[in-house]
Picture (cartoon, rainbow, N blue to C red):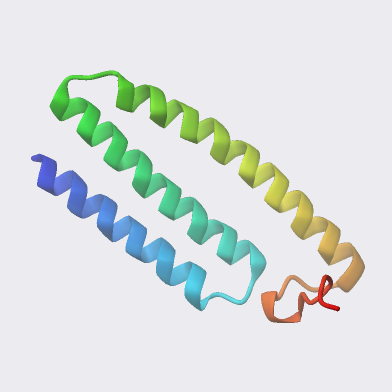
Length: 99
């Protein structure tokens, strides 16, 4: 597969994730869309690392995967805390911080 194939795949995954973020009302669905977008970035980093024969892209990919794991843990903890208070995870109904 050529570099353009990987970039096309990453663009498709990013577009699916963006569509999920923009159209979902469920907070967990929004988090899944964000994860897809971050995975598209990882595909780009690995593709450029492979075609440039450089390990920096792989190091950045491992770093972003670790950041993604932390983001998922914090995001799900926030969603669970909001569900305990509001009994919903619909993003339209989460006006907890509005004044």
